[in-house]
Image (cartoon, rainbow, N blue to C red; front, side):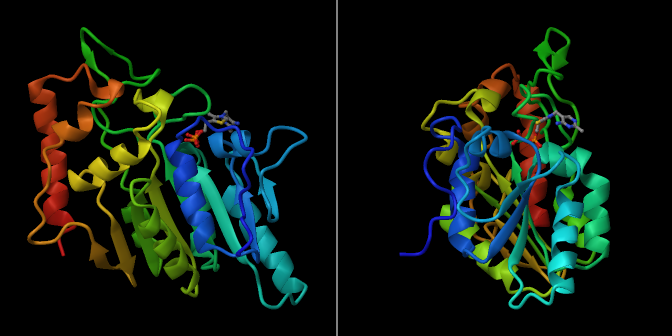
Length: 288
Ligand SMILES: Cc1ncc(C[n+]2csc(CCOP(=O)(O)OP(=O)(O)O)c2C)c(N)n1
């Protein structure tokens, strides 16, 4: 039996989409792994003081420093002549990735180091009470973008972090969702084979943030992909090499994904049209 890298006993919400994704990531790694983990839900729920659910070397870093800490670990191990080098993995939420750690990630990618960066995208700062981040989608109500008489919630368009990663020349960039754990595990294994930096972004439904039921995280992860809003993607050497959107793909209407989530329930028909348009664009952009 392979060693379990994240043990039972963490205190994430029962049914947490991020934890489904994390367990799928861990199945793609092995015990020769060191993790640099930014502040956020995953860090808080897996390492309450005096306890840790981690069964491998794991370091909690400042919110903004997960990437440079990973670089430092790699540099130190190289200096020591460590062979084989462990897999160096960064884990962070979308707040730590799209916003607060953004500049430092760019520096790490510039250095062209063999580090796998995983972003668990809950589309908000979940741990501090669902504030909007650069990953929050159009129309979502958060505590900093509340809906109201004159507001539909967030009016920003989600930042294209995959595009940012590709612009740094990464040889492996992928996207998945907690609705497809085997896809996540496969992508982690593929990323580890690349000689250089890699980035995987995983949509991780959050029950309190999305206002969904405890058993709906995986369903929402599936619907995100099958509506075309969050397709499963893989780029190798800068080129789209795998996509859940193919020429004969027939997308479900976005309403099927949005209607089950409290964060979107205030939206009107004209707002849904805007979101449908975002999905339609994806159907063209990511079609293989
Ligand atoms: C520099 C800095 N700013 C803000 C905080 C407060 N803070 C701690 S966790 C957190 C939310 C993390 O959000 P995200 O990175 O999206 O991860 P999630 O909790 O959603 O998994 C915030 C804002 C902090 N610790 N450090």
